[in-house]
Image (cartoon, rainbow over all chains, first blue to last red; front, side):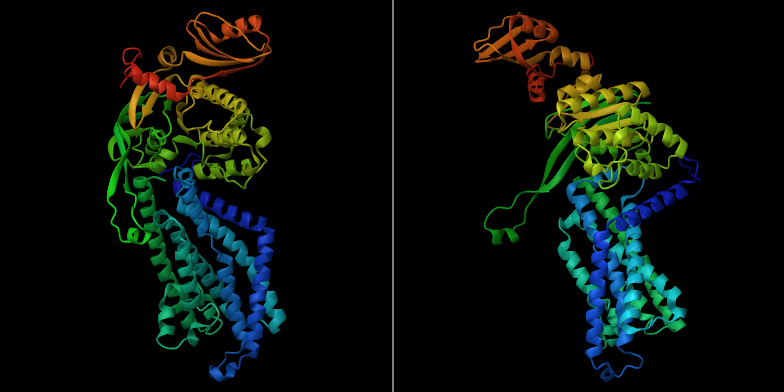
Length: 274
Length: 334
């Protein structure tokens, strides 16, 4: 087994470096206090607006058993938590490519994509933890209850982690798109709108008319947003397993696609320069 | 084994020719792809411990060559072996053996204190803590960066940042250091300090140095061999002494005087006079700088002295004029 300078097997040393980047992301997110407070304020504002909206909506006319304003509030607390925690970090990769700073990262023994993804995971983890606490407090204050069955909490946490990693992988691809299109902002806008609509950010995909609901649920966007929140609508073991299986499938597909995009970008830099 | 071995290295970039005509017509225009040669058929070998300046004017192909040697650019033709690796095939393996500084790009984390950047690099290169600490202490002393460690990189001056960048590139103890324009944008004092630190450290540790620059001052202080490249082609590969003898012997000196109509005369010195100012062009073989300064101090009442190295463009013109000076250089390859 190849060993590093410190004597540890190379694979462990790479993992150690990635953990250092996760910690860096966490620390950087924590240092941005104004940003975090702004994010929390925005989160509460969105939740309160929709809470008022759901209360004013005759939801019983939908004839969907178990769907009420409280449940929809908690559904959206989860979807918005994922979206706001992820943010739009693709711009860091775009900036590195446009400025040429990526050259300094490419001459290190740690892959650039892995390092930046690890940093994003750290930063997103911090925001996710803080928004989760904020959402919980907002939910208790608004609805007077916690409409998350205790039995689904482990699956909800696991699914939320996969959802955010999926979204971060997509953002990494969007950042790398700068190698071909210069400014990937238009691609990001399209991706973001698809995430909102096909991910069921505000309304559960089960509300969508056929065949759009089924199509949206099979899409990767549902795995990024709808999946964890869906446990609040259907917490049966069968639904949870099916949702997690679909998420893991998308994780494999999007993970592979990200690897290919990163390799294609590196090949382009090698041919065309940075 | 050579530290760097380059054989027939070439790089061309494929670019689309610019669009012409009305804006709407441009949308539907098919633009042919043209090959733009950046580096053409260069060969050289650098032995371990050598300090080599790779110089040329802007756009000569210096950075392109350096990027090929680090593996982030793939050549169109030719071969290279750097520290035992083929750079574009073994980029990550090579990264552990070399240190790189891009003068205009930072490898440090902008918002983090320098110490945290060094710690991250320790984790990336997986250096054991005791070895890292010992190395860091040595680099802190060499580059005089002790007072900078707890300051964020964003708060450092350019000169301070570059010193930290070079220390960062040496943290993992590379046998080869590649420096791309390390003194660009630095003031005279910062340049001099950096050159001294770098020269001392490379001599003490036997690190091979390949330095690109278009500042002839960098070359004279740090290097003992010079490779000149222009328009992608190797123009001269010679020891510093031969370049100094043949092409760097002229210096400009500006004397600002108290006298309105100053007069100065000395063998080997051409003088241009203006009110309160003399511009001297010295042939240092005949009139060494220190002797000219001493003579000026006795003949004139001086208010200021500025000594300038010949611009690289003039050196290159002189090399072209002398047909690459193959006979003058001790082992020139043209």
